[in-house]
Length: 143
Image (cartoon, rainbow, N blue to C red; front, side, top):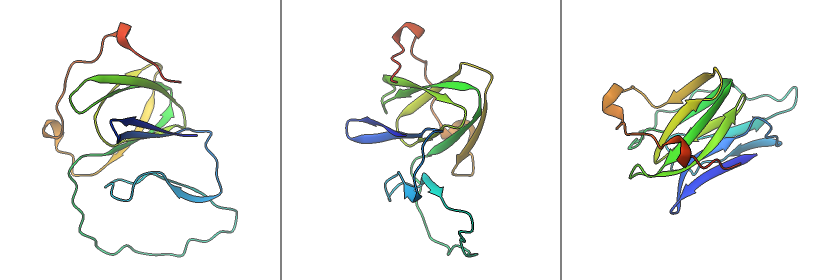
């Protein structure tokens, strides 16, 4: 299953659940995103010919992150661009999330391994604005 977190007409995140299955190739993100999230399912013997990519100038205005939940269980809290809490989702082993816009925070509900992919170079603390998380009694889990 693929889930999209939307707020005021803007796609904040895409969650690709571990149980998602389809034939062929499919991209879930809009073509203008600087980070793309796609899925491929090819049969045995299918060949992708060797290739190199042409240099293409791209402008990146916002950091987009892709997180692969390798193990454990993680709650992700979604916020709008003004740091207002919206909702939360639980990510489990094998789930993937692309965080595109808005804010986000995480709580490890179990010991967790996460692989992160984003545009570089990483700018450290200059790359983000930290703010206070929502209180535990305000968490709204969407299932």
